[in-house]
Length: 372
Image (tube, rainbow, N blue to C red):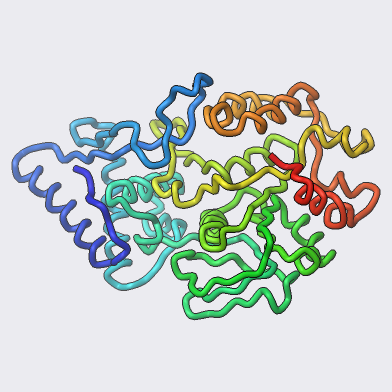
């Protein structure tokens, strides 16, 4: 049983939930084991040939959850419990986080990953995003720059003080009247770099917007970035550490992420249903490149050796199909990192001058097209 296309109207989602439950009841009344058919999506694999079927929009197959299989009983139980909570949220016009939902039945859910998988399954079943289920994330991203918007009736006017940090809106769907005179959007990996740019009045001097997810970006930050690019049609650049985790964060912004899910006591990865609402294919990698170490004559004490775990992570990322198909130059830089066996942080560029990033590195790279 597969849900039909859903609108954002809560009454439509409630109607779909009711229809799904009725089908389960019909199965039981006819002495059939209840089953659920879920589309499965995948944005990357380790096939270097480029002939894979990974896709944001089209499913790669179906997964059947059925009570005929004893191992599926718990998963179906969790799905129905979470669905009941979501139904109540929609009926009462309330919102809850995934963590809130977990603590409603912690002895049943056992861990957060179980709830995360159930919510993703429900999104696939009803063909909607988490926002339409009244499941809201807790935002951690920050934004500053030449930007003005209204969120749920509240006006945020970053333009008045371009180098002051504002929290990223939790729900991009609630953003209206967005306006900007910025020339580009810059995404930075870390809050420390974000604060360095704020202290240097980078946004005011360069007429731009700067965003940080403070490490791995959460859903609100990624959706907000996607919303900005779609609405303002601005070029977008990303600045991350020259290490495996920085590169992984870079690819999360551009290509999306995979959910880490518990399955038979083993962890497996699958794409979140609404991942296509968050990836930013227009994003360009501004730095820091592994090759920048020699280009900018950084001292050796700024380098750290890759650990064995770092090397395993790099090797795993090198096999991702989208790097072969869509970002071969990114992959080349990643190969350089592995070959040299070293890593360094963005802050290493400030070894001779605290303002080197804002005064020279970022402006000159954008102006001269030194990005990939």
